[in-house]
Every structure is written in structure tokens, then in C-alpha cells.
Length: 216
Image (cartoon, rainbow, N blue to C red; front, side, top):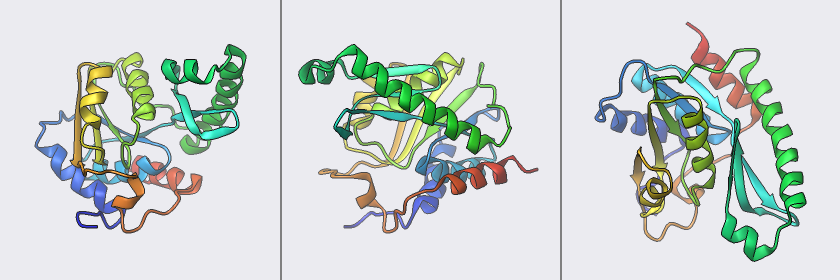
């Protein structure tokens, strides 16, 4: 399969080079979606000499089918796929139960990753949202809404790989964003197929990437 990235770090370096051409302001902040997106985002932040922060997003899995997401949550935001909820006849109690469990995990991860460091202030600034790829876009939609609620003046979604129509669909659902994808293969299949090495990212790796970026 041609056009694959060696790993998340190479993808991040290439993404950083592409973002330079968008005229990124010096007060912008790079936010990596945990977990794998943080590794990509660390290289983007380094390439652009910008601060790095983490945005934890949790998918909301259908009871009994956790890989099938009916929505996603981020800090203070919940995005739901109403069509899927109706189709599967999910009850409000089921939705709230899954949301509560994922909210607990979201808060645990933010505490572990930040190690006491407060979130960076996004008010009036450009937020560059980075993940290792877009698939359905549900997690990124939650991320976009979260940074919008936190006061970001400009939102750029940047990923190494996504389906050909992913950016257009995301922009249709979340107006006034900019979206950059380095690779838009057709057919797409899955994010991991477009990396030669695509290992699981641990909590420790995320925490270390954030700690390294915070050091002077």
C-alpha cells in the first residue's frame, strides 16, 4: 500500500510542515486527541514551535456493542448520533449510563496526563486539533465543539489521513472550521492501515509527551 506513513511521529512532522503554509498565528495552541493523536500533535507542536495540550475524547459505545459508537464526549460536550439512537431504540437511561462511565474515564485520563498542569487557555486563540486520522469523525466533532465552548477564535482540524469526503462532511456539520488531511485515500478502510507501524499508545507515553512539551 503506497503513501503510508512510517509511524505517528513521521506523520506529525509532515503535518507540521503542511500547516506552516496556512499562516498559523504565534499564539496558536496544538491539541492532541488522546491517546494516539497526542504523539502526532507533539511533532506538530515542535515543528511549529507552539505549545501542546491534550484533549481527551471518549466514544460512547452501544451497550453490548462497545465498538459501535452512538456519540462521543469531550470536556463539557456530548455529541450524539440521533439517527443511530433511534434505529437501535436506545433508551435515555442507557445513554446516560454509558455517558457517566465514559465521563469518569475521561476525568481519570485528564488527571493522569496533566500531572497537575492546568489546561491551556484557548480564549481568543487558534486551536489546532490533531489526531492520527479521521474515520467516522464523531470524536473530532466532539473535540471541535469542546474547543468552541472554551472560546477558541479559529479552529483547524489537522490529520495525516482521512476518507476522501471526511473533511467536507465535518465542515458541513461543524461550520467555520478549517480541515487539513495529508492523505485522502479511496477506498479508505481504516486509519491504522496507512501506517507501517501503528502500535497502541499508552497513558505513560501520552503523559511523557505532554511533560516534555511543557519543559522549557
